[in-house]
Length: 431
Image (cartoon, rainbow, N blue to C red):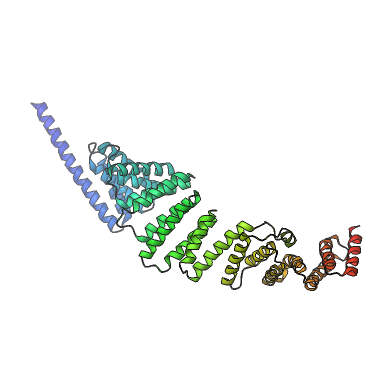
């Protein structure tokens, strides 16, 4: 009889203790939530920790433990103390797995939270593992939050990019594009930015047509939002990125789309620059030595196209850049048009600072000679010689290239006596 009474007393005391613990847990939890809402983080942390300490004594499977773990993890995350939040979310995940199983959609929110706080700590394996589990459960159950669903796949695409796995990153980004269409709360800008990232990944993978389709979708989204000149601006920007990625055909197609869409001045300039760069890549000989370019001169459709595109670009620039002027001179030299090449080379000389003109002037001389403009060519050559003579003296071997150039000009101009003098001088310096 006495033992029965003792057992009953133990049960009563245990129930009473549990009731007290439950009440105390509720009190600490409510106090923590109130403090957190008021911005009193120190008090909230103490209350949530006290509630967690109590919850750890509850029977296995009691959801109050999960509540306490989540409350404290959420507070640490709010304070950007991700290294403190991560283990709490991981413990929460374990508790939920024990209660629900490993593939229950009830795990989705916690898997996302684990990935979210693991990323800033640099724990990429945990980020990827959590998000891949998230994606698998979401696909199997169809119960994922639409917003978190596409954001999870977007994060996976970024993680795979960081880990230099471009094919996997591209696959996740494609899935992000599909998933974001299921999110009624996704903004137009969010949808456009997902497509921007996708287009760049497609370009890097060498999938030009897929990238072009993505840019067209971006333009359509922006047009629906009332953005003026959305099509030409998107096409021009895409063309520039495609060019940088080495996808010349796609870059040309996008640039032409931009020009066909009545672009504003900025978009037209960008599109024409892309087209000019593409043509330049196709005809560039890797040297600006005009004698060599004239010797290799042979007109072609590619050179005519390059000339036209460079000229159109030059008309939009005020004044044209030195790069454009130099390219125009080289293209005209390759076309066997020395007089036109000389005109562009003169403009290049004038565009350069006075102390940086020497090379451009040296290259102007053979163009003038080939165009039969001997007097101007000899005058420039003479000025260059005088400058070198004042710097190194009249007998320095560094004068020989310019003297050789002068000899050719004099012979071409029929000035045999002067040519003979230059030849003798070169022999004397060469000894």
